[in-house]
Amino acid sequence: MPLITLIRNICKEQFDAQNNLQLNMNWVRNSPIMASFGKRRPSNSPPKDCDPTACYESFKKHWQQTYEIIERTQPPVGYPIQDDVLGVVNHLGQMVAFLLLELRTAGNSSNNENRQSCPCLDYLLSENLLDKLFTWSIHTG
Image (cartoon, rainbow, N blue to C red; front, side, top):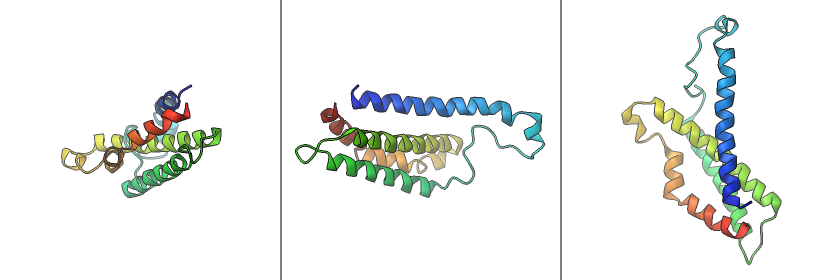
C-alpha cells in the first residue's frame, strides 16, 4: 500500500474515531447522572485547558521528529524500514489531531480571532510540509 494512501487512511480513521467517540460520549454527557455533577460545556467546544501555544509547539515538535526520520532515510544515505514509516505515520496522526483541534477552536471563535488562530495550519502551508512528505513517500513505496 503506498505511503500516501496509508497516511490518508490513518487520518480518516483518526477523524472517524474522534467523531465516533464524541457520538458515543453524548449519551453519557446528556444523562441525568452527568447533569448532577454540575455545569456541562457544549459538546463541540474544545477543552478549556488547551493552550494554543503548547499545541503549536507540539505540532512543530512532531514535524521536527518526522523530518528527522525523513532526512535519515533519504536515498542514497538510507532507506526507510517499517519502524520509520510507522514513526512518520504516528507523528502525522498527532499533527492531524492538533490541526483538528485548532480548526475546531477557530470555528468557535469570532471572525477577528480566526485570522490569527491557526498557527499549525499556517506552519503546515508556509513550510511546505505536505510537499516534503509527498517527496519522501514517493521512494518509500
